Length: 242
Image (cartoon, rainbow, N blue to C red; front, side, top):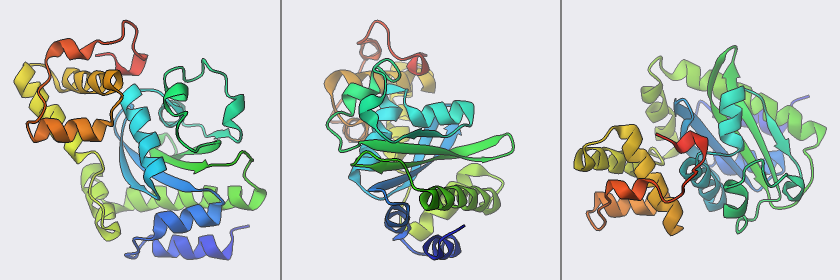
């Protein structure tokens, strides 16, 4: 049964409340909630997040090209890990050590899907290890259903829908500067956008930096990369290969 608090949140989806991410986290009994939409296959764009930990986690998945969010996009199935200490090291071999500094002991990733269409992923993160209660699962399933219908109804053009939904929450595209930097690298290096993004991801990973910070340095012309920066690892995650 849906809780009264989640019923109110679903009503507010059509309003202009910038507090929705925090409200969702509180009702679901987690510390952070992140919603990301699919841009192209395994690439996602963060729409909103309830805090820095969620954004950092999403950026790590984006940079490394692996993680539960990408698995959910690929399979359309939810991933519920109530104790991250029990996750096998080879499940996400690059992500798990990279996220060790983040206060994430449990994660729950659910697809925003309708039929065969998967629009994106909702990720809930908790700093303590425990499964969701029955009530919390009822609420999160209702939330992903409401978000999916909301995004589908926003506009047939998915990019316009992101902007339309982001505006009431006073947020632009989280990785707008990454897209700008990728375009600049594509022109500078004379390579495809996919190859330019690989170069940006590889540089970020090898230097242990945030992909947002690296992209900002490129756009502001404080940093210039060359194509050799695209292969710091002889065997990068499959999703990041050009």
